[in-house]
Length: 271
Image (cartoon, rainbow, N blue to C red; front, side, top):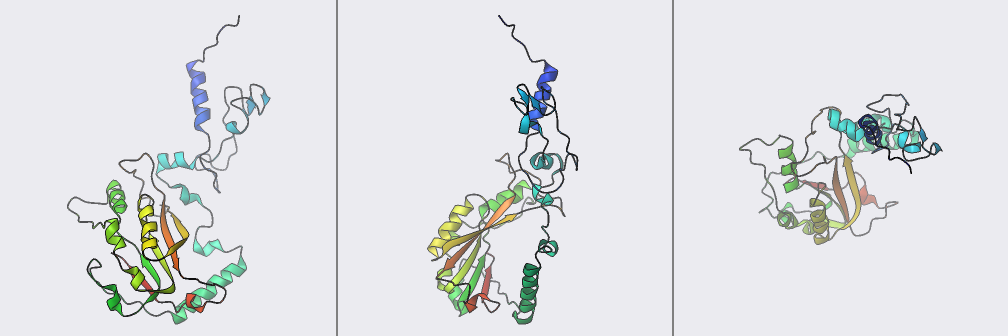
């Protein structure tokens, strides 16, 4: 009969360390914890070898190769994983794509030449009749004060005692008469957070007569500020994205529809 073999505490610690070095993401750029090195952490059966031979066994092969653990790096330093995405700046994004860069430059020049200076009006959107503006719009941008934003602000310590941070209910957002002030065809951009507000955002688009055609995901970084490292009070994770739902009313043929150029009438709403 074989004698049972117990795992010594030091060996158990090595196994836990090997498991702790597994990858949660594979992003471009050097590892925040290990720099440009490519060394791997050995498991109980040696470096890169399992019990059954090279690359095999429970601890060998791909589980023994060190990779970029940006989630653990965030826990240790507070730097978001998005900080390490390469070519994220607008000035560098199209350096390797000259045709796209030329198109972006031409668009910027056209907007600077033809864009009308913006005009604003401060009103209470709960009671203001949007049809009094006397026109219809091709593009509407809405950034409602969802309850989710207040919870996130409080968790980050940015909400001071006594501050009145206005919050709208989903029904109040839905009561905005967006369908009465938008042309056909037209677009609606609706910021909806990253939680239950997304479901309410989709319901708002349907109520206003739009069908959802895109979902713009804002991957947040704190490369310049170092802020927003706090966790939500009822969660073990930190939200790193925010979503803008895009709705379309009518039919738009992008190859020749002239109403999608710089002459569009845009209405930003910030309740």
